[in-house]
Image (cartoon, rainbow, N blue to C red; front, side, top):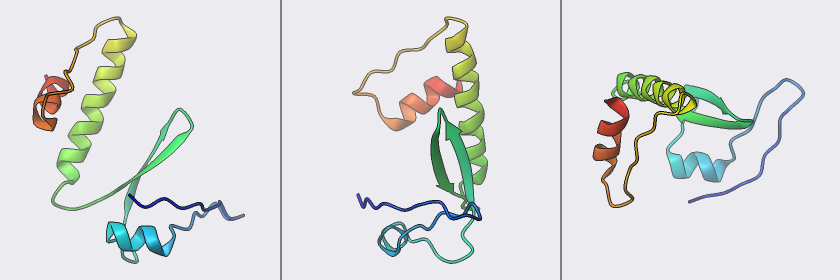
Length: 91
């Protein structure tokens, strides 16, 4: 995993350093979903082939957060595969 430090410009722009762009395969004009999760800003590259899945995952996470706030929770085991955990979230 590559790690670098960057800063916000006066115009609200953030530079993704060359090392990170190269490691992630990011090219000019790449589009991103931008998330604010408790002050942590997350970028997710938008890819045509995974956009629908990404949007469903966002909806599932929002539903899960609502359920947790109402006291309902689902437990995942660390030995579970990503697909099994996704299935729990999507239920």
